[in-house]
Length: 382
Image: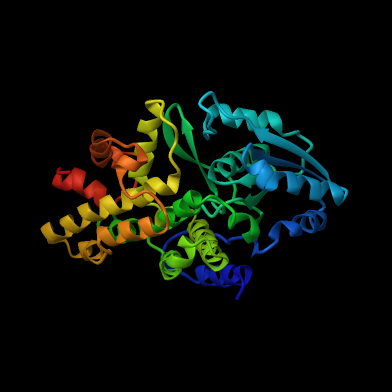
């Protein structure tokens, strides 16, 4: 089955699920193929979108943004374009200033907004689309994060990483010819984001048994199968082969769809993401350059796995068997190294003090039960 057929099957299964979650239909078209962006003009014409805005940055414009704009204009569409400016440090951060810039760069009469880029561009555009009540279309330029299909926008507001309700894309055009050319560091970040599902899925089971939080077997299985597919294709991902990039992007989209089905990030975000968010906030406060989200998540997952395995050996809680069953941290690190991603906090520029502070406080960033929360609030040891 292609992606759209699989989404339809998951929707049908979720509608029959009695787990207690309020399930929602995943309503988007996914084009995951070579030359996917060539489908954009036809799609827009079918939807009667005659005027759109294409948002990209200084890197993703030459990679795909310019081509998207030209193809739309050649098809007779009005394609406005907005290039996100970099901040004084030469970066683009999904914060209040960037949100205002996108709002100012999009004309009110535009009928849809197209994000051409990776995670940051997508988070900004999905949030602006929600505020302006505009359809959101996605053109990923790297298989770097599972947030392309998300309805949530992680934004830095007043120096704190927070996730705001936004809108998922109406359609996603994941062109393998484009994503295969992305820097290996971005591909490795996407793999790191998927690797983090080991601890996020384990945390979800713990949150179900110890925290009484809702648990959906459909969303769990979707994410678990996506993670397994990444591990099965790790060598092809490491070599940047088309089949590897396709498998990784497929997994990232599935992970995003699993969150959409239950309207929550539980299957894809646990203690490892909370630690990553804390590191990001600390680095930003220190004026440091941002680190790719998935790079932080992958390293955090390996470190957290060590703590979780120790917890499983010390505690008599039966549910902690899920932590004992996690791959060894050394195996997680070996996979990260194989795909060319960072494997240590030193490589991320995260000091030991920041690491320990994150392990002691990251559980407070989200109202969610995790092993990290248990360690800090029940055992009171880190």
